[in-house]
Length: 261
Image (cartoon, rainbow, N blue to C red):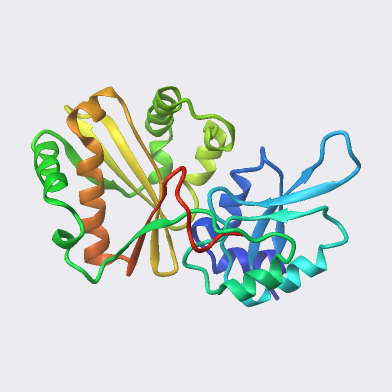
């Protein structure tokens, strides 16, 4: 007979998986929500004898949204508060979230999503298509079938992104965090190379029927040669041919959305 933890892990991938939650252990201790089959990060509150919890970054995902309320009620006496950003493709509506979070529920960010039933030419503008052609003329782009082997190259590229964008906080993932994330079931990685040197990469998580854009990083050569255009194009080609129904490209830093808690 499977334990609660084993049942959550066995059927999960991407942001739903325990291993992804463990990659954020510097934020808090992974705690299972056994009824909804999701994970949160439990934290000590500095200079106080209390604890709170947050969902995984960037999204909280679970298998049974209708049971999230029961999980939150079960831990209500143990934690001061629980805050999460909900998966835009979660099986819930605003009324359900209001029941789960009666104290505060806000619209947060609008995600850009693609329905892969439509041809690529209908959602990739001509200007971007021209950039794709130019980038692919000088770059080799391929899917990487053994993502953990990318750790050194990926860490170098992401370190460049941290410096280039001034990233800090939870998004400034450590090497140890990436070592765990690259091994999470459902990860799909694409790499762009110039003269056999990695200049850019994209990481995706496949979860249910959605490909979630997780992270992308490029060095100066990659930026100059347009590796982002080439990588996204090859990713879209791949998912169109043998992947999910939807792509979630994430949200901008200051946008608003219909789903967040």
